[in-house]
Image (tube, rainbow, N blue to C red; front, side):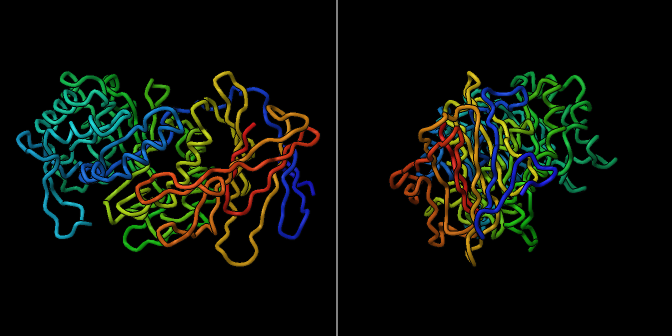
Length: 480
């Protein structure tokens, strides 16, 4: 049947199958296509946990896997809540120093020394953003740390001063007697940038907000905007704090992801208008380390769609946060398991590839099935991606959707190949025995090593039309 208001034709061909027909792939990248960064999928490491991550084999392996897919090292941000609890100690022999009651606790205060920065220089191959303390209002200490970082790290990209200042308590040392607001924070940032920039350069990452919007802050920075390299906002679509309820169906909904990420478009545009880069400097599925939705296959699928929608809305990098080792539902890797979400990061990086330059969405964003095309630097379409966000929890019959494409890159006849990301259902967890696969056979062991062989499916092209079938809670890449 033809549905009014849609730019595709929907018709039912079987009780459990829906078909989406006549999606036309552009023959060349349109002017509306979005530019893809070489580190569109980036990683954020919690400040106090960073040295511990360097001791995990899986950290190096996972980052190397993503680097191989994109042809460039993964950008990393080191920061988070504990950066605003940290004091620099130039005489400290270890990277960090703190005491906790349990290994899974985050410290309420900590120190860090010069080897923190040499570790970041030696163990991280991509450019690195370092988050330093502003909340404690010890500018001299932060300046000392910033200078040490600058002198130790040839791979340093930017310095953050403070983490999520929109959440600072009224009792925080940085908060003046007149109170705290976005205007007060902007004045504080401006003052600190102006004071520290002469010693380290114009390399600051501004804002670093969770709830305030950066559009209002940029003009408040005045001439100190010249000290800024990038603007950061933090993004968690759902909350797992204080027993809050999370919902996987809502998280992985394509139309929901389209709507949510569009909320960042104006902020990205304002940053770009000021000549600044715009990142989600910390993001993941749910706050407070993630909820029950975070280690699932559905969260892996969410990552695929979320990264692509972010790019379409001007987000140049999405830094996925990895928190406390051993107490982190949303973390991609740890001591024993490479979690289901990493499969999503790996799959979307496969789609973007070493040659992906421009991205366009082919559906209208209102349905459950997403379609994308990636173009190379010459503007030629090279791969398609289909994501079926219809929710399948393992009960009843798993529906499927057939999607047809014509146009750019598709021959009149012949065979194309496709790579499938699938799992038993959206709630499947690798750490609980769920088998998530890429290409029918690729999985990852506990150290993030690739296990198995990837197999591409053949897709027959007939009359210039290519049709693929994607099950609910599944994604597919088509190679043109």
